[in-house]
Image (cartoon, rainbow, N blue to C red; front, side):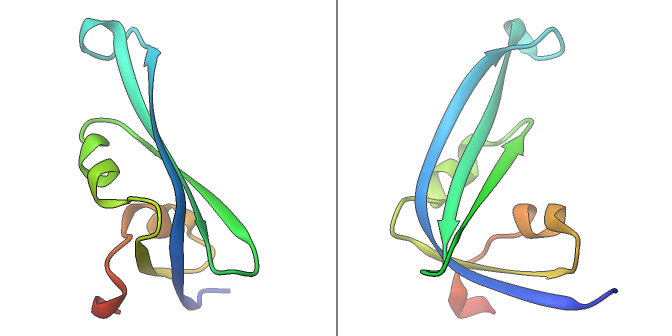
Length: 87
C-alpha cells in the first residue's frame, strides 16, 4: 500500500530532552518529543540529531501543522511538519 496521506494537527506538547551520548559532542545528545492531536486522537513524534532545537522553537503548543507523506512512512510525517496554509 503506497498511498499519499496528509496529517493536519495541533501541537499539544513539545519537550526538548538532553541525554548522555558517546557520539554527541561533549557526551550530550538531544531529542525532541512532540505530541500532536487532531481532536480524535494523539500521535507522538520524536526528533533526534543535530538541529532539534530549531523545530522546538516552531512547534509550540497550540500551533497547527500539517505534513504530506507516503503511507506508511511515519518518518516522512515526523520530518516534514509545516504550517497548514502550505498544504
